[in-house]
Amino acid sequence: MKKIHLLAMLLFTACVVPVSQAQESLFLKDPSTKNKLLQLDLDVGTNFDLAYRGKGNMFTAMSDQKSVFPAISLRLQHFFSRKWGWYTNIRLGIPVKYRRDCYTELAHAVEADYYVNNLIPGTQKPDVNPCLDFGVAYRFENSHWAFYPRLGIGVNSISYQRVCAELKKKGGNELYRIEYRGDDESNYGSESIDAFILSAGITVNYKLSRNCFLLLNVNYIQPLGRFTYRKYVTDLYTGEAFTAYEKIDLAIIPGVSFDARGNRLGRGKGYYDKLLPLLHSYNIGICYNFQVNEKLPVEPFDRRMDEVWTENGILK
Image 1 (cartoon, helix red, strand yellow):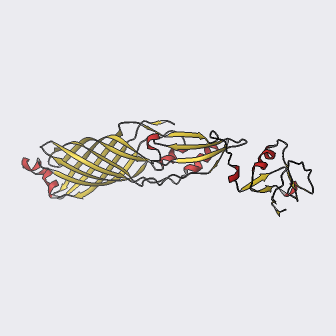
Image 2 (cartoon, helix red, strand yellow):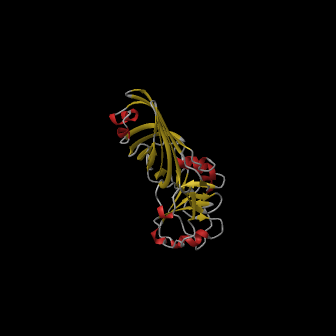
Image 3 (cartoon, rainbow, N blue to C red):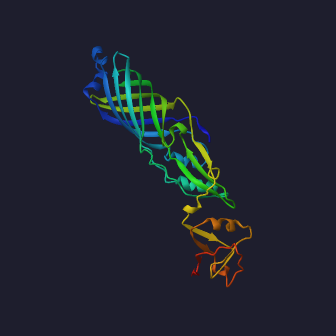
């Protein structure tokens, strides 16, 4: 799995908005009023996700979102001097989910060598990606233009889809559990990652009239660390051998041939001859109708089936 080197989100907002009395002070001549500027901005715009998730449809399906989706931001900004101030910002990204099914992508990736069975669904992922940041702000103003660059730090929650399934080897008895997820062992089961971020942005206002402005807002978010989509593979046949045969209530037994009395002919290796004496279950033999014979040779150690099923019905 390749590491994600960059997660960057740009939030653009361009709109015409009315201003409050606090914002009107942007263009007043009284310095004492300008030094006490307090702004509360609500932005609705577009989020561009520039994250690299690795090559292939599997990574794309895991991210479970498109690279462009809507976002809402609420920002409080206070200037305690003529040029400098502080801000705090809450941003909610609203990912648009892909229609692509990650389990289908997994099946396509391994179909040459494995069957995919026993899909294990994860919990529902969050519908929003919250982000909280705060820092310092600067302002530059003239009669028509106002510029507010800012720089801060914060935390961003990144969501993804967890994939877990069991793979059966074609032509063999190997059975594996494969899992793709973006967290680590200490955060197992989570479907979101909280990352510390560096945030930079600028708000530009252009005064159209006394009570109306044209506003452009741009934000850039860069995680301070790196995280990885990981693949975990567990060999399900490396545990202790199963010996609790008394717990088996029903056994489905294949064979090369059966007769109407329930006698079975195997492949001659003796696997079921060793297993069947250990079972106290109800045993059903399965085969096609052309595999049924009138009478089979029987050895003393052979065990009869309780029933024999074919595509035409039950023989016994």
